[in-house]
Length: 189
Image (tube, rainbow, N blue to C red):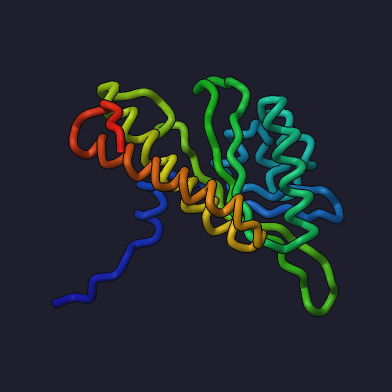
């Protein structure tokens, strides 16, 4: 029997992954995969070193400010991060994207590079199917965010905040259970 192995090119093609990106905090330049460059209206000849401002021009204004701040902070603290943002409407309409990555420092030169992967969230944000399907997707996203909050709050050593996040996580669990049972009714517990 032949070995069963993942086919990475096929997996990427059938997933929401748009490819890799890299940001050089020193020069404030951005290298983008071809698909991501097209979505951000960055010309092909600039995709290997476009000014960050060029890519941010294709992002909704309020999201662009936050995204720039996240990239700058990531370049300083080296922690993993993710940021979601909306593009300005283009030929295919507005898109929801997520960047995930972290900053690394070259041990020899000390140069920093923030890099990671980009994902297209547009399809999961589009209302499709029944209202119940949309509510289920929203509840699942809430659960993902609650799990992320629990991980983040643990490092803050703030017991009252940790209790609040736990309460939110429990309530989201109840909402998921209601959705799985097929009812959106609020039950007292």
